[in-house]
Length: 127
Length: 378
Image (cartoon, one colour):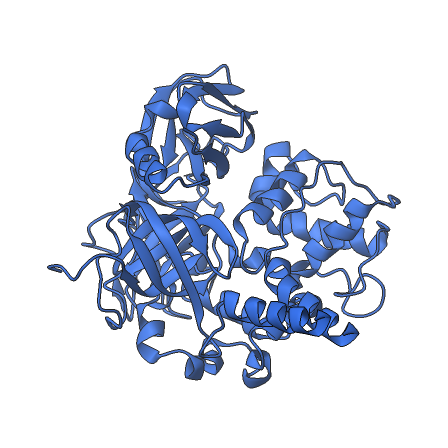
């Protein structure tokens, strides 16, 4: 019986935590509560708050710099900048990609990483 | 059975180890101390190669101790010098002292607060993708941390060139991804000059993108100057030309990849013989607020707020101006634009909380960041 419980627990834990499918891929999922443009950043980048935010199986809260449009629309549903939608994607941890223009200079806001691929829970809509 | 328990322990704890960055330094520390805080301090310093206690032996990564000895003091001095604008300058110090006081503790704790997935201080603020990737993928990562992450991402570290350069990591990321990362783009931009108020002849740090290793030509109010050094395509050190005109001046850059001129924004510095130093926020109280009481007064403390014209900036927008007695600014979170939308959206999903980053803008430029926890309640 103990062995059965142990094996069952092990299987549960193994399937609970997401595993990377590619060595250098960091995945995330989260609920978008607010998005603001990073007006200085090269390209089009937005500062997006996620709460909860899942980088592994443990929910946290935090912001990401989201590159728009992301590299390759791998996901069916897009519009990751619409608040109150769920997002799923890939990010580079630690990269500070959001700079906002504020008066005579640009200011950076701390983010957990730079999102380069993302999809959302929204039905496919006009880009 | 025993083996199974051990296996379960490792599998269940790996993600939590990855997040283990929450230690808060509350005590002043000095040479001779023997405290648990010193152990955490050594671990923190060892996460950055620039502040490593020792490459081998006691104090080295994985061999941290609770004793604050000479090696720790040297590492603390390096840490303080590295973050001198936030740790030393506000205290009118030129070089690190090795004493862990309030400003150093604040910096150590701030590094904690924004490093989540991999608790490495070099991953934040001005770090570039190259540095980030180097720290993630190279042996420079603290061995114990590397082991934790490496276990989770099995085999990752064995595959990556230990030089840790972007090119060595590139085979593991799509090329299009690398081209899309803002800090790797060749688009020439200046984001910020630190500090904002500068003297003619003073060395400043310029942050941006598209900097080349050589051949960058900066201009301060129309007066050209060659930088002292540039690295990582995002960072240059430049001496403000003595002939630069006084007052607020546009800083531009030209190099073989292009120019910042005619971009949709211009970054400026204020050139003066009596520069005002950057504001460092010592504390925020309360440091958390419930969404049901957004009219609660929040006080920021510093030693050098402006008497007037202090503005509160967040990613949601700015509010102000606020006057100050030089040390305190009081504001209410309800005064920040868009906060109602954030609260409404968060409540939809019964979100727990989020951290609102706050900076103060005044005559000295932008302050450092403090975090205000916004707790969603009924």
